[in-house]
Length: 114
Length: 113
Image (tube, rainbow over all chains, first blue to last red; front, side):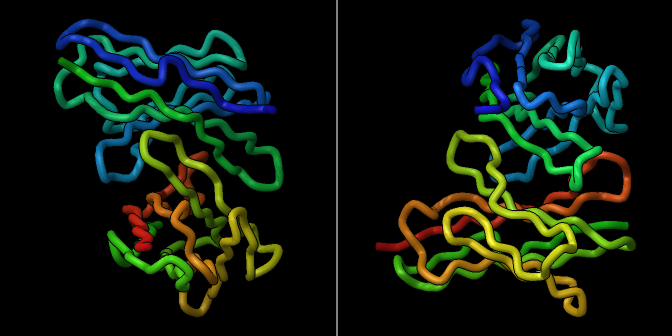
């Protein structure tokens, strides 16, 4: 089945220790998104890639970076995680040239910062 | 500005009862609207979407939603709740800025035995 995969599902890191979260997709979608979701809140868009074009949300902290080496993979790098960065991180994909720009989400990575 | 409002952060129903989750939107352009469901420690799963083809949209797991332009609403319903429906539900709007979903704040559905 075509899908969005996130690894790892659970990640524990230490305060200030860089961490990378991974997302891959077999849908061949050209847009990939990263969201941060804190407890009992809606997902908050951090940034997205349209093909290789990177689009950062204005309020995304500089601590968050992303890489997309190819169509299938996208990474979220947190350079110096703080306690406030503990959250669920969701990857999503879409293909805007289809009839609707529907976003399909992965299972998420829950990040704990000690 | 575009926005989505979900009335009721928590909704509790008995098993077998009607489920009604409310969503109102504000949009300056004809919207695409979505309902997603999120189970604990999971990602968001698409339940259904409105794309202007039909005002009554049927989704997975017996859910449906009706787009009412006059009321700017897109409420989610299910005739008979099941214990497995207990989850967080998000209504979302395809925003006018490129590739951005505008989410409501979510409604947690509790199903009582």
